[in-house]
Structures are given as C-alpha cells and as structure tokens.
Image (cartoon, rainbow, N blue to C red):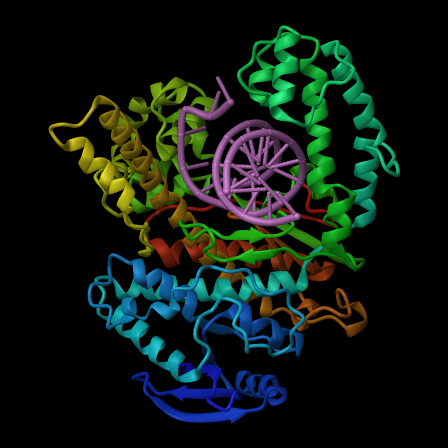
Length: 568
DNA sequence: TCTAAGTGCGCG
DNA sequence: AAAGCGCGCACTTAGA
C-alpha cells in the first residue's frame, strides 16, 4: 500500500490543519482540529495505515505528540530538508526553493519539551502555516525530482527526517543513568564532596602542584598565570596543555596533569552536572540533527556527545532490562572504500579489522601505522609520521586515496563537494574568495600569498574530510532509521515493567537510548536482548545495501549485551 | 556587567 | 602542541 502524505501546520484560525496530498502533491482534503484533538487524530491516521507526516520541524511538533502518547512511523522535516536541498549541487532547478528564505532557519535545539502542542512560537522560526508547508513541500519534491540524482537525494531527505524523529524520541526517553554509580565514581576519583571548597583529592593534588612549583599561592586555573608559574619553576613550555607538559621531565608534570584530569571531571561531569542533567534515573540530552555541517548530529546542553568513557559505568539498564551496545568498526574508511569503489581497500576491510587488512596487503608494517596513515589520508595530514606514510597508502589504494585527494583539490580551488547521497559542502565565503584573488594579483605581497595558500589548504582539508565524515553520517542515519522500525516490531512488556512507567509509549518495548556518530545503545527487556542484537546487525547490513547496493563492503559491529553500557 | 575570544579537553 | 577533520562546554581574560 502506498503511503499517504499528510501536511501538518496551523490554519489561519490558529488551529491545527491537516492537509492530505494526492500522488502529485496537490492538496486534496483538509481537516482543522483544536489542539486537544490533534494527537488523537494523528494516532487514528497512524492506526489506519502508512502515513508520511510533513511538517515544518519535528523538534517543535513531535515532542507534544509523544507526550500525548502518540508515536509516528514516518515524517518529513521541511526545515532540515530545505537546508539540504538549498545547498545541494545536484539541484539546479530548485523551483523557487532557494528564494524561500523564511525556511532558512538556523539549526536549533528544541525548547525543552513541556509545552504540549505549542506550535505557536516556532522554536526555529520557520513558517508554521499549513499553506506555507504545502508550498514548501511541493518545491522540495519538485527540486528533488528534477535533480541529477533524485533517488539518492530522496533517500537522504527521508533518512534526515527519520533522524529528526529519533532525536526527539531519544530526548524524551533518555539514557538510563544510575546517579548512585555516578556518585560512587566521583567519590572514588575526586574524594568526598566538601561544602564550599573543592573535593579532597583535588585539594590534595593542587597542594602537590604548588609544592612542586615552590609557589604556595600559584593559580592553577588561569592559563596565563599558570604558564608564568611554570616558567618561574624552570619549565619552559609554550602552553599548559597536557600534551606538551607530558614531554617534559619535571616534578610538577605528574601532579599538574592529575590535577587537570580531576578538575575536568569535577567541572564538566561532577555533582553539579548530575544535579542538572539527571532526573528520575534518566539523562536526557538534546540532540541536534545535522548540527554539524557534514550532517553529523550535534548536541546542546549536558555535553551529551562528550561524556567521558569512564562515566559509561553510570549507564545502567532498569531492573528486568538490559542494554545492547554496538559500534561500527572503522566506519569512515569503509565508507570511503565503498564510495570510491575501491575493491582493494574493501577486500582489506572485509572481516573484522580494516587496519590489520591494510598491514596484510603490505602497505605498511603495523596496525598502528595503518591507522595513523588512514586517519592522515582522511584528515589531510602533510607532516609527521602520518604524512610520511601516506604515499604508501596511495600506491596500495589509489582509488580511495584519489577520491579524498580530489575532494581536497576541489576545496582548495574554491569548489564544493558532496557526500554519497548528495549533501553538499558550503560554498566558499566572500572573505575566503577575496583573500585568494588578492593573492593572485601581480602586486600581491608575500604575506598575502602565504595567508591565501594556508587558507586554501585549510579549506582543502575540510572538503577532503567532508565527503567521508558526511557519508559516514548518512550510513549512520540509515542504520538508525532501519533499526528504529525493526525495534518497533518487538513486543511491549506489561505496563508494570515499563521503563520508566512515566516514559513515552515506545519505552514499553526495546528502544534506542543513545546515539554517538557510529555507536548506538538500545535499552531492552532482557528477554528481547537477542532479538535486539539481531535487529542491530540486520539494520547495519541493510544500511550498507541501501547506500552502496551490491558493492562488497561490510560494516562489522562491536556488539555487547549487558546491563551497563561500559565498553569492555 | 555584559559579550567575545582564547585556551584546553572531552567525544567521534 | 598537536601533526590532521568535525563538534560542545567550562573557565579565564580582554574589551566595551
């Protein structure tokens, strides 16, 4: 059965308007409802059959639906799709889309969820009228249809929209988080919490630093003052970063590095963080789909994507539930092999460890070298060990290396590049172009030329990485979207075992709980753990096929089942 | 007292 | 001080 397309927005009277579109995207039927009827109507249509909900912004509309107990299977996020199509190099005839500047809203975090049905003040500033949504949707459909790669663009926009739903759901359901485990870790690392002052271990370590500096009043938290103290103590570093400190042999080095580590934990993820971000056993990060230019997600508040690995012990399943954690081994080089149709690299990647495969093919001598060289290829290293190893990688994998080298050249020349599905890098800005053209004039100074050259190289490294990072993000979106629908097919548990009872409807069965670029955590009733693991693997395979068809590249997972999400 | 920029470090 | 990409956050200082 083909899916129905229903556009959601506000009517002139300020009520919710639902407009059915027929096959050629013309409006065929409109219904207006008051806010209190909206969720019920959506639920009814979902029960009736396959619907794609087209709305301005999932982060605005969807939290209210979830709160009312309604989950939708498919959506189309006009704001996110607009941003993709506006920049897409595959779109030449945009059917007025690029002129529709009211849809150019900045990526925003959702207002924090308590407003039931509040579409009134759109958090992202995009239009909220149903008519505006219909017009924009028609422009988007036409732009995709007339693009040079409609299939890929459609897939990208659908995946992006699925991601917009998942981001809202992840926030609503939260990461199961044991405050007790977190506190135990804080106590053991930082020592007992002390009213007023710093925790005991931090104070003790600070005292050791000051003793080693021979300066009982040394300021450790002000970079310029600490730097001067270090100089006075005879440690002639240029910065106070751990990397540079570690290269020196001086009694202050060890305690200072220890101090920085403890302070980091204390200030970034200490008791204050726990108090602010964890409640009722859940950490609820705000995800921002496409918050990164490459299409990766960003987060806002709580530092969701920067939780230190050591804190993962606090991620604990509810009683009767467990966690399925999976991450993709070497996602980016695998994606690169597939994009470049580099069968040699794909072969080296087949099985478990891509870096071991590179060593086996004789390109470099050790796994460490393989990793360093491959990261250097994707990031654009020119110097050091990584830069030295690159030519060997180019000889062994000319197609894959050719793809990233070409992306870098395009960027240096001021051009744009795009991901496998067609997300396109931003155009070079005016100041960048000015700098380049000034440097190419006859009267250009040496300084101008050097600066222009450097900024061209910078841009080249950005576009080089864009194609790989962005395509990896697309793979991950496809993985997430496919997994979400597989999980939705698993049975619910009794309400008494729901996790937690006050959580959103989908929390009564296995559900995604965390996502970090190439890693997912699923919270599941214990009896469904194996089924979840199968679904996770199946969706990874399916994402690979969806993007790369029959090209022989696999995406092996590191998958673990256990009540904590700790890696190990 | 506010904001912007610099520094450093957590994640991929 | 990262070399070599992309982020967010905490803390400080400089400047208005």
